[in-house]
Length: 371
Image (cartoon, rainbow, N blue to C red; front, side):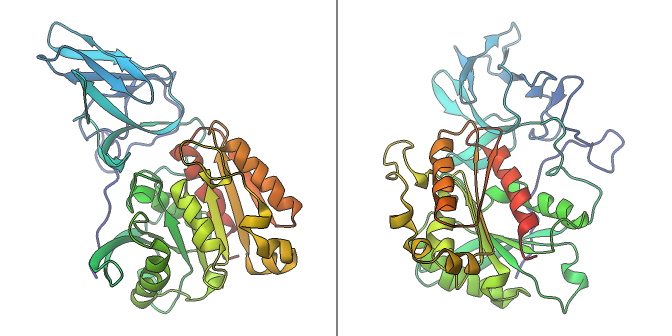
């Protein structure tokens, strides 16, 4: 097994050794922490507007698409520049549009999202630091390759191990299997979501038990078959896990939240805790949306015996952003589940269908696990 650290781009301190602290609120225009090292733009302003500069002297038009398209203005030096409106705190994919062609920004680190390697900008949130680098013991994110007979191909998953893992060779650990959203991949929860940093900070503060986190690519083949019969056995064979349901959890965002429901919740013999973040499976969002949620059709086992259902599910957590079009369907589903007797925890976070609510969901969910 090889070990690799997934790079997370941080602002370098002027003094050199440690990353510059990011406090979540700015007092002056500051290069985004998601920029390529040494690049000044995009900049984030104290009012959370972003300023972009693009060098394209031969272009006839340049704009930034950050969920909304913002035309840039060409200067005499061939630099196009302009501002967005104030952006929601969190992580936002964006694209540069040059003469009608959508492309990435060479100033930005690239993240796999929207089905491509996309630019992104990190907007800090006041008072929120749980996903920022701190001076705490750091775990590792390792690349684990494994053969998939069902796909007849090699696959790659990423595995977070806590800082203490190598210092405790006789200790075994619980595992969270964490799934990305549509158009993203197995790197998403570590690069965009900062899951490893979230767990480092929680474990150092003794708010979460030391655990492994496994991110696998979920949009390939029969993923339930892959996860249950290939990924989990690989992790149990190569890491010091506690290989039983009480010490396994599954969670995911959006598409991955639906997988956590359809795989994790349906296999209590494998997973005892489930987290469903911003899933569209509760009905009514976009083309091909799921039918309205029904406890009777979705969870007949809950209807048959709420006590038995709750006994095998230690944590059943559902969340969604308050600005997400899925929120009302999700809230209604959580209320229906509670009415049917499920011990479900529901949380609505500020924000839309984006990474800030998902980071907050993981931060809260992880503190409940394996206690």
